[in-house]
Length: 277
Image (cartoon, rainbow, N blue to C red; front, side, top):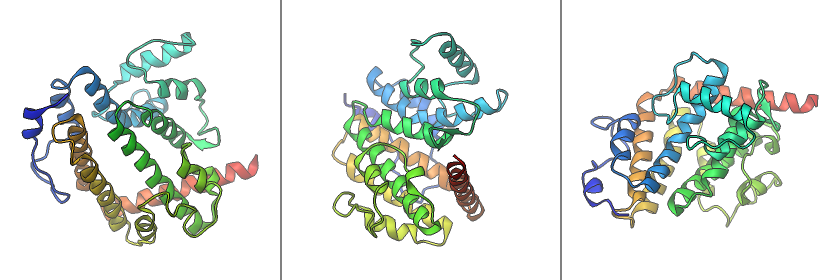
């Protein structure tokens, strides 16, 4: 389906925009009512990343405030969790398959199948999204999975961690990263942005590192949605760019350092758990 008027009305954006751009929460409501049912489902899949965060938050604290951009509320999560406990194969349009899988295997422990809860849920999310009916979205999720896994492998190499315990997903890049010690991670000729990511991984300025990662993703979105002049792909790319701009507004050097410290702490904890098994 083409969205001539909707796309023509979208504002032009640049990577350094910080003003006059609606939040991801605001644009979700504006866009959903103008999309077909099938395209609205694709938008919902993008916003499920906030549901993932909210689910983990809700499991830890039923009274915690959830991110407004999520598709589901605290009441939704309470109903869905109860439904899964009562039915082996629950049917509810709110319940995406990967969430059912996660909740069916979830325990109060922080580790699921040797992964942190966050990584395990994220891996399920990517696997589900990479099977969706839209090629642009499938490719976007696989690109992100590859970027995140390669950067994780670079961090593991720097600090002597075992990448087998940190790499998520089941695609070709993930399989290679789990098996190789080569300088190019065995991905030369497999992932075209490898050298760029290796240079990004060597960046010592954490804020600059984050910006370079998002710049790579921004360019990917522009290149891969360019010829979809009036299709849903243009709208999805717009939402993803808004998300990046919103993130840059909040990002600071201190925040970047905190993210990195948390990541290393999680890696070390995973290694410790594996050594004790």
